Each structure stands twice: as structure tokens, then as C-alpha cells.
Length: 338
Image 1 (cartoon, rainbow, N blue to C red):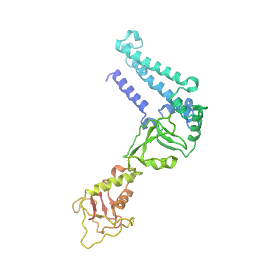
Image 2 (image 1 turned 120 degrees about the horizontal axis):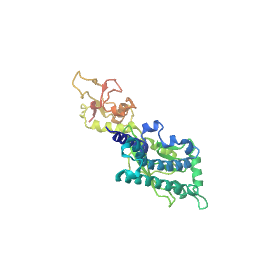
Image 3 (image 1 turned 120 degrees about the vertical axis):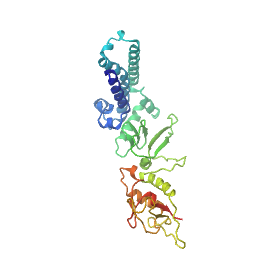
Image 4 (image 1 turned 90 degrees about the horizontal axis):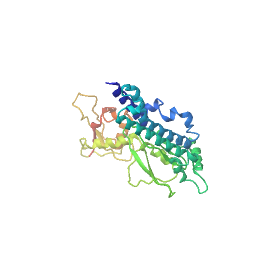
């Protein structure tokens, strides 16, 4: 592969990682917040001012990337004589002009934002809508900074894509979740009593919903009657019930009455373990001679409780001991009772 192609692929990978910052890049500290932390200041002490500077610097650095590619190509492909723009091809002259124009426009925009104490910055304009008639965005920023310092705030998401809830404020960054396991994502519409503030949406994992409820002082209405799964075990329980319904149904002998579930003592016993997944003598599953004593929900909770919580992808294929006799069974051996 020639040097130009190698440099192009390497620069494209670098640009994508720099713009979208995957978790590996953040772990290595190759982010705007980490590399320029001294100039940005402490987020804990001055949250709003930190993000005003961070967003401005991020804009400038991202707009430098096209011109950076041209400069890099000057060294990766010296035979094209790119250092002398007037002597290169029309295509490279056009690329250089557009790249330089993008950078200049970003500089002008950053200068416009910084005028009169950053009053033109999008964050400051958004805060101005919450300011009192005789006040400014700085008073609102001061209130947010104070509440952000408190340890009881709610925060969800990675550093560059968070939902933050303090005592009186709900704030969001753009969301780019990196999920290593199947979870339920909730979309919540946040509406302000202030008519100058447009409603916006926040997204978070259902496992964090209860913590959000505890922090918010305003009610949350579930307009669509969405079933919110708070834990991975609850998500698994729904899947467990679906698979059990596809299994063979166990018919109780005539005259046998189903007793209350010994797990919850609320519902009637509703499942029986039958060794159906494999032929006799094969595999790890064993015969269970227990009568029906557990309801489907309690059996599903027992199954989930015996799993490796760090590997949810293995739950459906695993085997667990019967909660009564300890005979091993899998999900294919769980039968509904009629």
C-alpha cells in the first residue's frame, strides 16, 4: 500500500475516534476535556463555564481536521508539491480552499460566541431563557454550578453524553450510549413551566429510572403505559416466561390439587420440571421428581439469581439446580402446569 493510502486510512481512523470518542479512546485520555483540562478549568467547580469553553474548543479542533489532512499529505506525498498550493492540481487547490474556509468560519463563530462575556454562546442563550427579568444568564449558571457540586445529583451516561438532574435542573448532553448488554432505553419528554423554554427529550437506561424518580420533585407521567423494567433480572424474567410457554404442558394427575407457591405464597404452583431437553444419559440435565411447588415467576427469579451477572448473554443456555431437590435443569425443562 502506498504512503498516501496508508496516511489516509490512519487519518480517517484518527478523525473518527477523535470526533466520536469511543470508550477505549476516553480510557486512554485522548479527549478534549483531558488534553486541555488546565485551560477548561474544573467541571466540578464551574460546570457551565467549563462546558462553554469545552464546546468552543471542540468546534475549533473538529474544524481543524480537514486542513490537518492537507498538511499531513504534504509530508506523506511530497511529490505532489502540496506545500506550494498554487503549483498543485485544481482538486487539491479546491480542497485546501474549502478546508481553510471551514476553519476560518469556525474561528469567526468562536469569536462571536466569546464577545461580551460569552453572551452569544448557545449555552448562555439557553440559560438566558431561565433568567429573571433583572438578571442574566450568569445568575442561572451560578445556581447550576452550586447544585452540580452536590454529591446527591443524578447523572447517567458517559462523560460526553450525560443526563444530569440536580435539585432544580434537568440537563442533557447528546446521547451516544455504549451498551454491552441488552437493556431497555426510556425516552422522557421534559417540559418546562417557562413558555420560553422548548420541551426536550432525555434518554436513559431503565435500570436508572428509579434513581431518577427519587431525585425529581416533579411527577413523571407514563402516557403510553410502558412497562419499565428496572433490572436485568426483570428483563430476563419476561424472556423466561415467553420460552416456557413454548415448552410442553404438564397435565396434573386427576385429583391432585395445586398448592400455593412456596416461594411467594401468593400464586398457585404453576410449573413442573421435566427432563425434556436431551435423551436419557446425555447432557448435564437431571430428572426432577418434585411435585409442582413453584409459580412461573418465582421459578424465573430463581433461575436468574443463579446466573453470572456479568454475562447475561449466557443465561438462557445455562443450567441451574432445582430449588427443592437440586437436580440440574435448563429452560427447556420448565413446563407450565394445567
